[in-house]
Length: 119
Image 1 (spheres, rainbow, N blue to C red):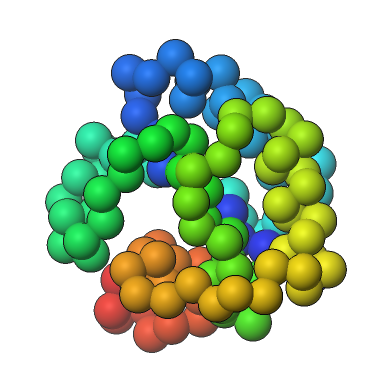
Image 2: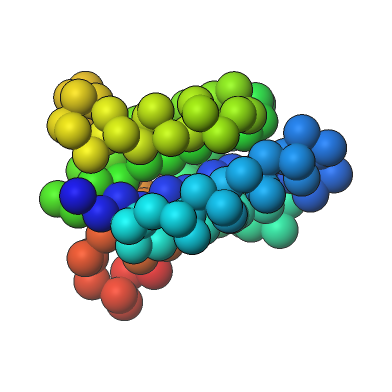
């Protein structure tokens, strides 16, 4: 099952810079349709509009092919943590729906098939 991965981090954060290498490597080696790296300062207006405050890095949002956000939250910055979450999402083991501003973020970034004029 293809996934859309959105990672929210900050360029000034050394942990984020290190994790980006792992995130990019994971995205290029899987069938993830899209992997987006979102710097919270570069995209501050978007996050403010949606009422999103990121307090811990990295924060990951996973969107399934059925357009549901199945995970949103901080993760430990390790390749195996990312891979394990993606495996669980593909196996439909992350069942708790995540709504609200995370779903709005996924829609705004085009991680769903929403009307492009709403982006």
